Length: 544
Ligand SMILES: Nc1nc2c(ncn2[C@@H]2O[C@H](COP(=O)(O)OP(=O)(O)O)[C@@H](O)[C@H]2O)c(=O)[nH]1
Ligand SMILES: [Mg+2]
Image (cartoon, rainbow, N blue to C red; front, top):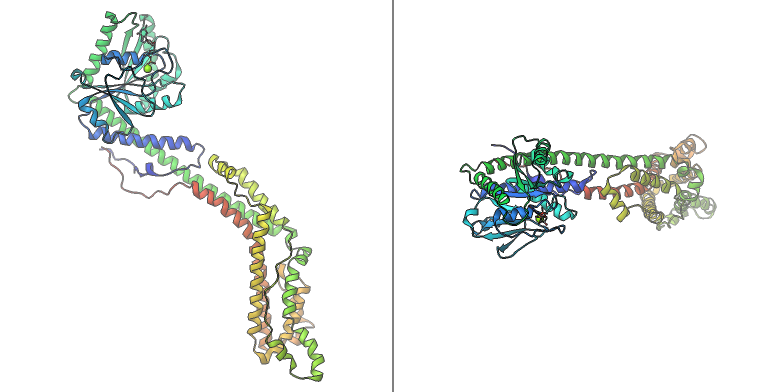
């Protein structure tokens, strides 16, 4: 019994942040097929062994296939490529086995359709009635070194399907590098292998080729057959070699213990386990890359926010004078209880108690929009963030998203977002003053006059917003003190004012930060799309 890692990772959708997500996804797809093949072969115990002829272009695979099945089914030609898809010669009794859980698309044709070239998208099953050829099922394949990539890919799938690889090479082609990869792959995946040197006309050369191929395949006990170059049809030498090869293949395929299949199931199981473990490692790496980028985006946003706060232009006097000061003045003017006081001085002389009736029903109105602001510091900090992200997040898919649907905020959007924030701040400020106004008992309203003075001081010293309340405190300790000692009401007002100024500053900083935050969220959205699905451990699958 071999227990395997959980297979559900094969069902996961992985967009890919690692450097080669395409190869990664290919591997996942291949492993999934691997599993399906494994299950298929394990379920159908009476399925004959499958012998796949694989090799380089023009080595004579199709010719050899036809000779082995004694039927001219697969097209053979000097034209390249001739064979475009797998052609399997299957006894009609076994055709049905290829529909249940078989992982590749198929088409079934009768044996009068000939000669065929196959189709790169599916496996062509040729249904025959030759009872002496029940097992093995021979499969002809496209060239593993085909210039047509689809054919090459298809040949790889047939490699997976084989219980035995019949590696076909020829005296002209044996040194071609690409087909030799099949030998290495067979060794790596524990595939059963048989090498055929086709079109042989030089026994001395064939000995040296044999030695070379044995070394490359790394399996000293591999079966090696030579087939002489056929000069004319039905040449006795040729026919005899074919007869021996066929006899050998029939023998091992009809072994009562079905050793070939057992070995294949074992090797499928091993390589599947290896592949799933490998995918798991890559997935862990994928998650690590995700977390790294997530952290990088966050850190870069923080840096930009800090940079924004450190920007001298943000809190300098002229900036405040043009942006914030008018608002405070506006609010102040509508709550300027000194105006009535001034009036009171005049009015008391004529009409005592006039003051309170005058201010009682004053309705606060919504503040006007802030004037155009100079958002250069915000745009600079934002630009830094955008630049940093583009420079440091270098995964192909992420960058592709950045290119296709640029998430970068532009100056116009920034302005709009900032205006919205300022409207909200204004609304908030108005509310605070309304509350403050309501919260003071009418009979103590006189104390509010002191508030006006403090507020006035706050405006004069705009640093109140940038750095504490020193002018207010200064005012409290100095000439304003006599006005403020009237009682608890005054203290209440002073504290409330302090809070308002403090919150105003916080809200303003938040508004500035929200632009960077907005950009940060746009980036994170992309990352979220590319995020690998998290792995919830399920029960491991036991394959054998
Ligand atoms: N003279 C000779 N030509 C052969 C032999 N086997 C294959 N060919 C020719 O080699 C060319 C390629 O053969 P084919 O079977 O299509 O090769 P494949 O690409 O490996 O399937 C065709 O023109 C065949 O007729 C052989 O034993 N002797
Ligand atoms: Mg061919």
